[in-house]
Length: 141
Image (cartoon, rainbow, N blue to C red):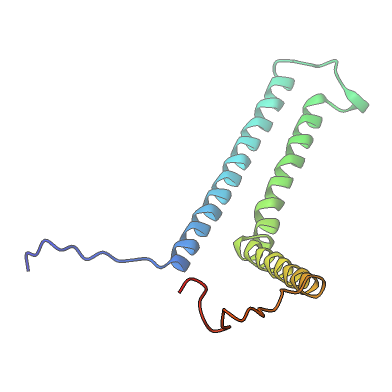
């Protein structure tokens, strides 16, 4: 009842990897939400700076106010961030990385096996024809 042993729950490596992947995913979504909030606040600030303070009133590239260009560029960056989190992270996740790693390792193993067979054909090991050493006998006995 009052034992000093504590029951510790051990997490197997697969569960640990799932937890770590979930934590990374949560962090990505949290950063995306922060980016969205900063984007909205920044866009409002740019509009206020331009309209109320008349900052850059004369700077109108292509007959459009400068703050519109700034907001559009920022929106494009946010859109890239959104696509990265929503689409690309789900396609190129840890499972995808693991599968790619397995494919490359298998390809390297096949290449090594092919090279080994070529070496064996070109440079075969000499047969042991010494009358003093039996094939089943170790060398240092």
